[in-house]
Length: 115
Image (tube, rainbow, N blue to C red; front, side, top):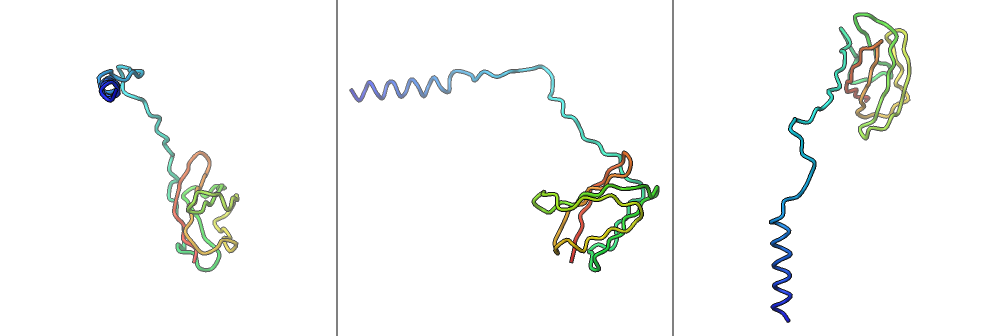
C-alpha cells in the first residue's frame, strides 16, 4: 500500500513540474504608460525646514497654486489654494510631509519638514 501512495505522490510531483504552465503570451513587450509631469519653472520653497509656521512657495509664473500636503503614510492632511507666495502651515504637527503643487497644468512634488 505504501508503494502505491509513493508512486502516486511521485507521479503528481513529476507532472506538476513536467507540464508547462499556460499563460497568455504575446510577441510584444508590455507597454507602460509613463506619467510625465510638466515641471513648475523656477519653483522655490523656503524656509525648509519650516520653523515659524509659514512657508513661501514661488515660481517663475507666480500663478495660483493648488497645494496638497500628505503625511509620510500617504494620508492627505491639508489642501489649499494660494494666490500669493505665503502658506500657513502652523496647524501641522512637527514632522516630514510631501507637498504636491499644481500651477496650471504644471505639477511638482517636494518634501517639506516642519519643526
